[in-house]
Image (cartoon, rainbow, N blue to C red):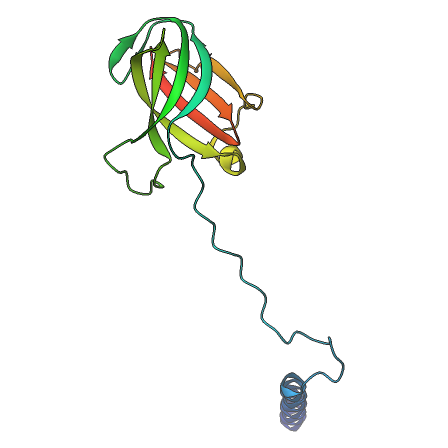
Length: 169
């Protein structure tokens, strides 16, 4: 019985060694046909480009604020306003913030600035990563009270970018 087990173990070891040698030899040989096997490394995905934000001052559109809110900590009455993106970047810089995507927007009435708030600029390609709600149509705005009623979100879709502001009630 011992001899049978010993012979079986020896045959198994020899068979395993032969299979290992065949596998190693097959891996070191070059493919005989063009295109057979994998000869070049796969291309690595490109590094994500920095999102583009508009430069300079830009009129964003007209919005109707349904109730009194605070913009930059100051009261802003209910009413219809023209919103304009300024060249002024919001500060201080936050860790992980992309340059030029946090700016100030001004609320104007009768040609005069009556309030301002920080606006987050989100490129069209990234909006689904940030917002799950249905965005406003291109070159239009959406103003809505958020769940809980503590904030009003002003969401403007203009020229391939989305502009989001959150105003406390």
